[in-house]
Length: 221
Image (cartoon, rainbow, N blue to C red; front, side, top):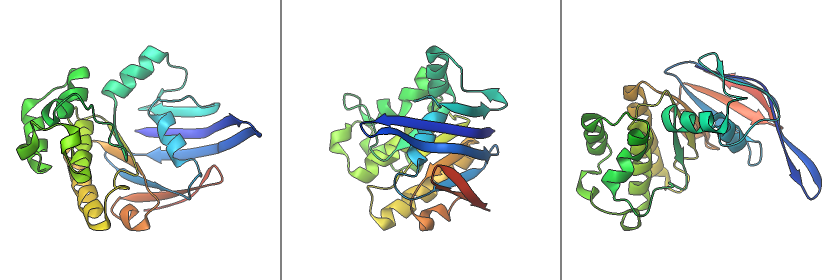
């Protein structure tokens, strides 16, 4: 479903060029889950941003169902972010002017795939029914993260990208939220690539790989 070949990315700093990704190769099968691990600064979030079409690589290829992502126009990348991928970040990124119900359906409506029954099911499974009319600032951190997960899955995207999605939650809440997210991802028929520094959380996914010095060092099933 996702194939990454010899991906390279550097950033320009005051001290000169900083190489972050140096020939990354990665494969993610349709319907599977992969945890991307590595120390801080190893390039995990950068890789996720490239796959999401939020930034462009210096060289290498990202293939989605054998179709290259690199080289697409800005409009095509925006369409990919709208229709092809669901994003879950540690910062939630909810729209403060919209209530929970509107936040949940936001991306699915943009993608033209709003399904009221599926959204209602997500709402119930995520325990958000009592807070549908509340706004993000009225929610706890755990509730906001559940809204972010529901929003990412409401349009049943082929791929879900999650960057430390439970990083701001306590350990018990984080474990519970991740387990629920992975179950809903399977029900949505999506694949998931999750960035985490926690081997405990990574153990919940089907596969794990490690990013070190800009390269994938190994994979465990």
